[in-house]
Length: 411
Image (cartoon, rainbow, N blue to C red; front, side):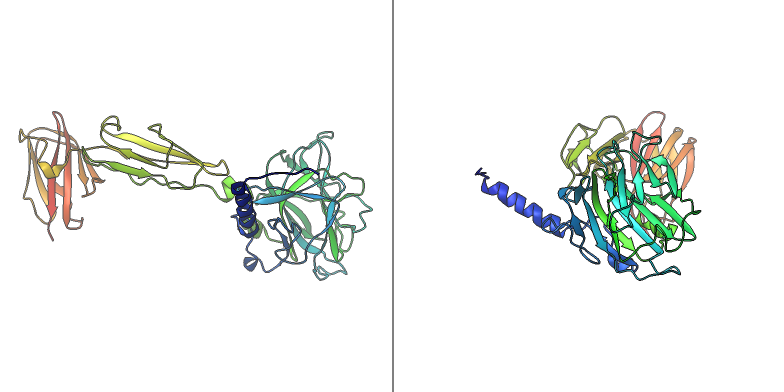
């Protein structure tokens, strides 16, 4: 008998991971309280009981299954191979004007490792003595990767191996039979042979991933769901996709454009919990510290790109300009500018000995809140009476120099 030795820290890590997998909820998961017509839902997140139902009855496994990683970091899925399938008692009453279930919807969160063979999604014959009722075409046929079946026709678009998808099939026998992928219409099924109580009607049970001729290649499934109604396009759009970069895209925010003072330090924080960080400065930690020595030029764009645990990326950028501190006196000692009366209620007069290319009003945090361009030499009115009382700064870019003045609004 083989003996396997693991150190205690590794055992603890595995135990904690299993607890997380059994109790976690993910952005692509359905909230049953929001879906009153949800009659069966299986998330495969209980690693001790993979066929456990979140809603409805547990699945019955015929054959073998294997636990695998799911679409999102920390999520789980099952892999079910050729010849193995699930039997599901859905508990849906007969509807749609017949003796069977003629109105229903199915949802599959799936991925296939390849399309070298046929893949089956479900089978309405619970004895598994007939063909499956929805397939992915293999690359040994024309139009590989397309989804459908002969009775309804196949989609024009193909899926790719190795990618996660959310497939929804909404059925109203005698009226329509439509396929949706990632919340969008994939194929309008041909209804010529879609009759009430016939091939696609459900008896008390349904088989998932079954086919009588083993045209049911290996498939990985993160969740399954069955509804006792034909979902509307709006509802299917709300179901969206399982692809984590779309279902739960990362977000990073490092703040607004800012103008800190020379000899001060600016701390930028991209937040914790991401896998990788890359700043425009070359730093690779969540937080960076800036001063006038590592911001280049008068105004420099500082950006960060983050990568989350799903390898999804996001970025943010701000403009940083270090300025002299007006609290220590004006930059201009030549008295090319004067502003009066100061303080006042917000209507100032600027007397300039030269033309001004650009004039900016800054708040007390150094953020630009207003700009004026191309002022001629002489006296100009600066009306900022709509601003709240307090301390502001006037930044002047002229032909000869840049200068700053304090403005105080009293009300």
